[in-house]
Image 1: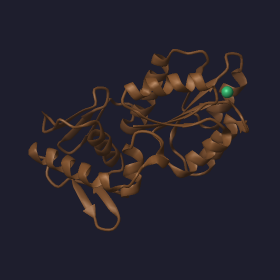
Image 2: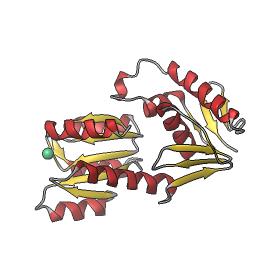
Image 3: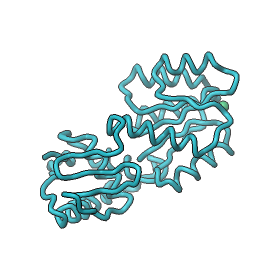
Image 4: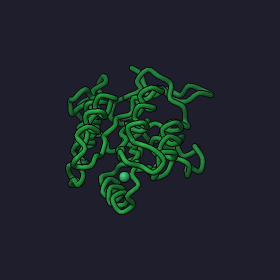
Length: 224
Ligand code: CA
């Protein structure tokens, strides 16, 4: 799961990143309006945590830009305590949720996870395709009811393919999605190949055959 945190208060940013890294999210960061725009243009995120008052522009403008140009990434806005107008405007423009500063990181985490459940499993806590079942809160995968032990990257990879079911996903998109840390630091996409191979092997061992296909020259596709 990949988060983008757009926030110019560096100490708050650091504590959000630390908290979500422990919760096994990949965190990318932007500290200004410009940097935020650049990141959302170039990469896809499961959830964007967006501060309203940013150097170089307003978070609401950034949200408007995001919604006008493609993007269905989940957005939680962070607003000052006294700015009811910002919260209403934010929800109108298409934020999925908001949180008023100051807040507890555990609450932000609960909101992020609820948003991801709504986005990926339409509110349910499990995602099922054929004999494969993913329990989102516990990050557990089952094939025909048998647990499939996966590493963090393999789990993120499987979930990414499942949520893009029947679509070809490029190796580059997978690399950006499962890589921890800033997207521009991905050394090469070669590591995707070995994770796909291990994931396929582990699924096969539990009776789930040929669910992930290689589409030569393009990427990978999950279908049943
Ligand atoms: Ca700010």
